Image (cartoon, rainbow, N blue to C red; front, side):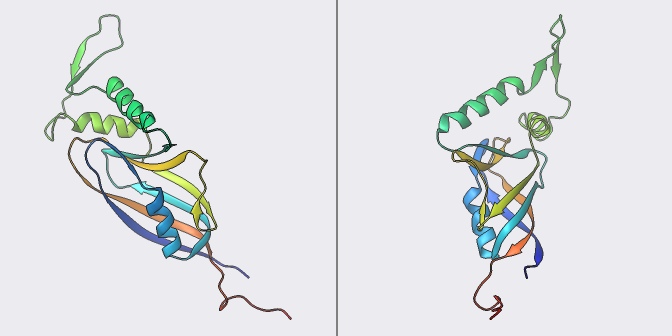
Length: 164
């Protein structure tokens, strides 16, 4: 008989400024360390200026292109409206730096939560996929991801019942 268990915890990451941190191995290690076999792992970023995403882990140009594209649609300091007269609008929220309001917009356009299945102690991802923390601020930041796992623990020789 197997039982579902759950755990709430936090994982901390130090980013190197704007860009991506591959957190896949950290998640798999956390699942393994807590002896889970299969279940669901819910991740929530506890910040308003970074996000979570799943994307390609084979070609680093994918991440570079994503970063450049996001910078092009969410510029710093101000933006041009899409109306015919292309009015320039300056952000009113700038007290924490020119990257702060754009970071909030980028976070709103992406994900702050991910729900991931795992089996045999590993997150289920495609061949070329990884889970990333996407930092939207310029400076190095300490980031906390809330982790909520619901799943079955691994069986070992001490909790397997023989039915001979």
